[in-house]
Image (cartoon, rainbow, N blue to C red):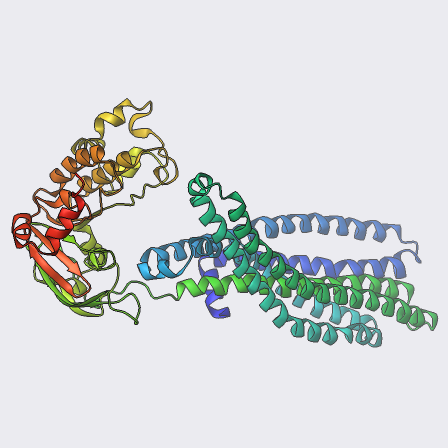
Length: 571
């Protein structure tokens, strides 16, 4: 794990080395001050040598000015390096999230994913900056202090450094407890974020059902779990920090007593004793840094582990020699296809059907029969368990996902609009589209005139998920987006079922234009919308139950006829 973490320093190695060089300079300056103090007390003051006293005092001032510059560099550029590393990781994980299959998002909450990408990586960046710097400073100060102190008085130095193993052993023993506590904290933060994201996304439903108290109860449950997790981590920290503080205070007392005895017996001078007192403070700084590092390391590495868990998720698979296909004609064939979302139950079993290019084929049947599943496996949103799917005779498993999906346009019942303008949402269908192309797509979708009535026209802000627009308006934008993409294959999954009859009729005209000249697969519960389909296929738990056009299926007086008549029995 350390090796994986260290790899992210590579693009920023120059700044990293400069940061450590400044840290080394800071450590040397800190070691220099006690020696100046010793010389002033033991030599310059007793000898009344004002010249050297002023010279070395001036040297100290210059060193502290240099220290000011180095501290600025370490504080600013060190943090900037950490931020850049954080941005690198966030860019990498976001790119990987784009490549993960739908099944990953079926099993993971959006809020917890966001927590890993935002909160966790902040802690990682703090570790990236402070971790190596603190370790390096601590090593230089501890070793440098020992050498200089031993040169003054070795026995007293050994008394001081005898405490170091005790500090290190205690920190290592508490490391495991801190690691578990911080990892659990991050899990609970993710759950709180997930609960918050879910509640805010459904705020309109919550308000319409006056369920504030219920939402508060659900949120408070997660919030309280977060509190308990923090209490457990703070309890571990409460065992850690006070004990180390006590050790620090006790060491100061030991040095004071031992140093006093050494001075009393003329084993060291007053200047040596003063230097030792300062050196103890220098010695305690790396100890404090090591203590802070243990906490920071556990916090940052817990975040990095959660980051790597996402990065280790298997991305959507492509064939080793996947081919990039151009524009396809659109003949779709499912050959003995079996599919299951989990191993317990097949949604599709040995299903075979062919959709000729340019034809409009509708899928009808009860919920759960696999209609939407068929729509999802053609673009390979989910991998099939057995069989194969071909387009124009080419197995889709041998195509690159990008070139396959470029040939497929989808208009679903639940239209998703990105936060932004109408123009940006239509233009999403074709990156780099011109203004004229976007406006033509809007005209084809019968929404251009409406857009022009808005104060900001195409630059009108649609709100989060398009909340400022009606269902019909959002659907037209979705259709305009599909027009702009101009795919060879079109999939309409309940595209009008959430609309009123008048709006549905108007949008159906736009859809008819969109379907023209394309292979179209339609999933619909409103059978009136598919009467003109070239073929209607009735899907059930046993697979294909009936197929034919509307007139043929009505004449058969079978399942489709019953479904159709049941929708109009009261008309």
